[in-house]
Image 1: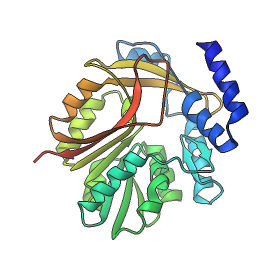
Image 2 (image 1 turned 60 degrees about the vertical axis):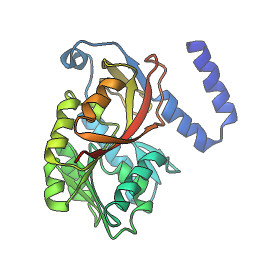
Image 3 (image 1 turned 90 degrees about the vertical axis):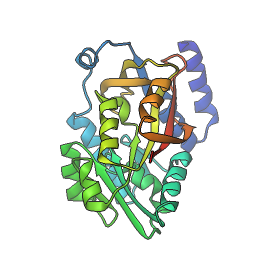
Length: 274
């Protein structure tokens, strides 16, 4: 496997233009998953966590460059000179907007300092109403409120606040559910709060009814970090979600890994059942 990967990397370096090579490195070399742990506590013991100041600082630096126009797009602190659109996610956002009178008020759970906002804003800024509310950990909320809020984007600590203050009726989970200790409990809470639409993107799945808990090691070229990560049993995940929501669409994601057999990254669009 290592020999094959080295050959693929060499070919990519020789053949791809710089922009595509950077995208290749991000999508194909970033993720490294290992293990199958019985509990979150077991996986957490060998992980550095994602609350470190190094991670936060890297994200802040990248977001500042995007805000100032020195970079076009940032994801997980990695800067790009071209936006890598998730077209299925954008289709979901526009579908929700079309059902709500050309208005969009969205809660972006775990949205950092606005990666998905900057990714999609050029398609949404013309709307009659456009509100992008990010729910994050305390440090990100403080930085976001001080540096990154504008007429469209706001930062909050709970999922209830965007509903109460911004009228948010759709919630986005982009590359976040897999890093939560109890993701199914959170999704039940989303339903109880009353979000009408749920959009999920960049989330890892495996076939069947059993989840697998791994540890993800981030490429050290990005930053030094490791954290527990779920690969959701696709059938189990859908069964849990469709208790309260109707499946509108599913789609293949951009992220990839060869570490977990038959795994894929993908997304879903759900609407609340009557």
